[in-house]
Image (cartoon, rainbow, N blue to C red; front, side):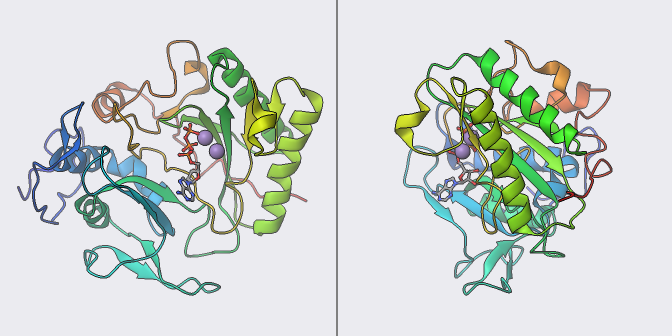
Amino acid sequence: REGEVAEAAPKPPAPARVKLTHPDRIYWPEAGITKEGLADYYSQVWRKMAPFVVNRPLALLRCPEGIGGQRFFQKHIWKGASRHIRQVEDPKGKDALICIDSLDGMIGLVQSAALEIHPWGSTLEDWERPDMITMDLDPDDGVDWARVIAAAEEVRARLEAAGLAAFVKTSGGKGLHVVAPLVPEAAWPAVKAFAKGMAQSMAADSPGDYVASLAKAKRKGKILIDYLRNQRGATAVAAYSTRARPGAAVSAPLAWEELGPEVGPTRFTLANLPARLAAMEQDPWEGFRKAARPLRG
Ligand code: ATP
Ligand code: MN
Ligand code: MN
């Protein structure tokens, strides 16, 4: 299958050279998506996805038998991993972490049945100073989608008031993620304190709508403003990553104007996202990195 990976891409990147074993292995049974289908998807979105997954520690949700089988959330490199998957020593940790630096690495992850890719919010260049904040909006069951959108807009307003830019993506699961690119200056503790402060003041201002604590009992009918993606070693699903859930939704970058009843958290999938990207005049997250600002204490 060498050389075929990028065939449907609008601007094909260099074809991945990693050979897949068992390309017909089914990863999403209902959707009929195979290992090769997943490799094709990542080849097509690679140009846009790369900044969010390259040269960052990664946690993986691996599902060797597809989404219906056993799954494990893996933060450390394993014996026998593809040589295209790099291992990297955490300067403050014990066991080696997982990292990729190319599409080959990404295809290596596909070969290893990594059906979700969850990066850190900092890069190997500056482990201690994150280059993004992710505010994860987790609605309780039954919360209207309009309220989730309102929460995202409120997070956006608060980020902008702090001098930061805000971008939004679907989670591919139940909610939205609002992401602010940072010039890596502030260290993890300050970034966590900022995110926690935002979540707590949202909950204090609108106690009927928002909650900042993970306690299940307090979340009834509300949206959890999950700020805990913003601490050292924490992860959030990457933009463009697939989810190991039925339907093969992906975490899809959106333009703010797109938020509405038609665009729910699973609206974009492995099957429809490449065509969406090809048809769009402008990438909604164009300029993400350029919009980075330092967090000022
Ligand atoms: P949803 O919209 O359904 O909330 P999500 O990606 O925001 O989707 P989860 O999949 O529930 O939420 O995961 C929450 C975060 O916790 C993820 O961003 C992920 O990086 C991390 N995570 C997920 N599974 C594990 C796990 N088993 N152990 C540790 N961290 C995990
Ligand atoms: Mn979430
Ligand atoms: Mn969460």
